[in-house]
Amino acid sequence: MRVEVDQPRCVASGQCVLMAPEVFDQDDDGIVELLTDRPFPDQYDGVRESAAVCPAAAIRLEE
Amino acid sequence: MTETLADTSAESPEYPAPRAAGCPFDPAPALRDLQADKPLSRVRIWDGTSPWLVTRHDHLRALLGDPRISADPGSPGYPHTTAAAKSNFRTRRSFITMDDPEHARLRRMVTAPFAIRRIEALRPSIQKIVDDRIDTMLAGSGPVDLVEEFALPVPSLVICELLGVPYEDHDFFQRNTKVLVRRTSTPEDVLAASDALTGYLDDLLSAKRVRPGDDLLSTLATERVDTGQLTRHEAARTGVLLLAAGHETTANMIALGTLALLHHPDQLALLRDTEDPGTVAGAVEELLRYLTIVHSGRRRAALADIEIDGQVIRAGDGVVFAGEVANRDPEAFPDPDRLDLTRDARRHVAFGYGVHQCLGQPLARVELQVVYGTLYRRIPTLALATDVDRLRFKHDGFVYGVHELPVTW
Image (tube, rainbow over all chains, first blue to last red; front, side):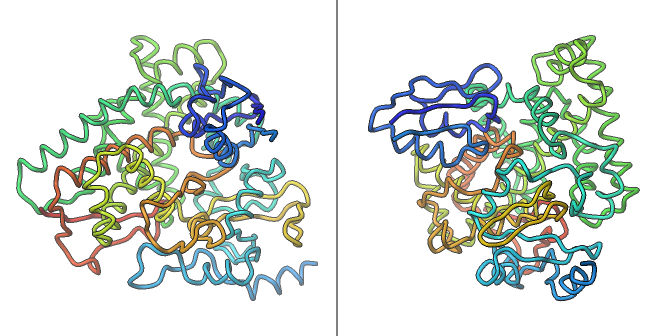
């Protein structure tokens, strides 16, 4: 799995940080930051759910 | 063309539609029927126009996530909620009624304090506020009105701390907010309440410029207004939005959530008997889904023709989103009318969807986790002190809930 985030689109809902804290973080303004673009398999579920709920469609996955 | 539209509107069901008697937690049956039979259909609203009503979960997400859907009440075809909203929208704005890029510019100025790390840091003080309020209730004897004694004070104290608003002024801002969220308020009353709150926030912002504290209003005053990134009016309107949205919504989730749990003792027991933060967090998502208190339809207008599921929404058509119905969509949530705190409800749309999705959701989540995780454990015998039939529900509110909730223990 490969993850990409689109920071200009991010609206700082923070759900990705709650669902996959080892993969997503936030900068001082709450905007998404990627901790790794290659998550481990046990993080896939959290990453997929993050992409599914992101209100701004700012998370893209390649599987 | 005009004739066709008129014909359509004559047959269209009226929106909003009433909930069924005796089913205070369930959306209006007429809207559930639309979801099953004609999920994209026209409804007739107060001014005689016929916007689309979106009732399915996948349609709602697709359209609210579409940049061709405008939140600007000045867009042609925009379906205003009330006459008051229609007459006031040009002068009393905040970023929730703007489109990008203006919306993004203003929203980003206030996202910092809602970052997960910052909100988690507030958890101990939220816990203390909740514990103090419960101590006060337990020191007296029941029955008490849970809305007045607990549901309203808790989020008001929290948002006051975050914004830097003196809690002593709570009667003033709670009273004026109530006018703003009531669908039956006259245009004059809404204008007066809105201006009173804007003036109040403007005064506070001026005071913060002179004597800044460690709070959001001080940051707005010193880092945004003084630098010319925000006008004083924009800053004051943003303050009004955060103050009003920051207490009224959560207060209703606390009171209505408690009522729903008292109606489902097995679910209440689950919360009362757990110490697992994950279980409590899951319960919060399910209560958000099940209750979906923002029940007056998010309003938008199409800026271009949009094809969806074999239908075409034309440029200039109004669109209304029934989130409380979408959150009961059986395609998205199996057995949707069942309150099941153990289900995975994370894809609910109680906070909306798209770029306007609730800014305060991280705060609301932590507040509700602390409240639901504490209240029933500390008062295990909590019970309703009246007949449910005697409760007054906020059918006429933009935000659903109960006006009072007499409880005892």
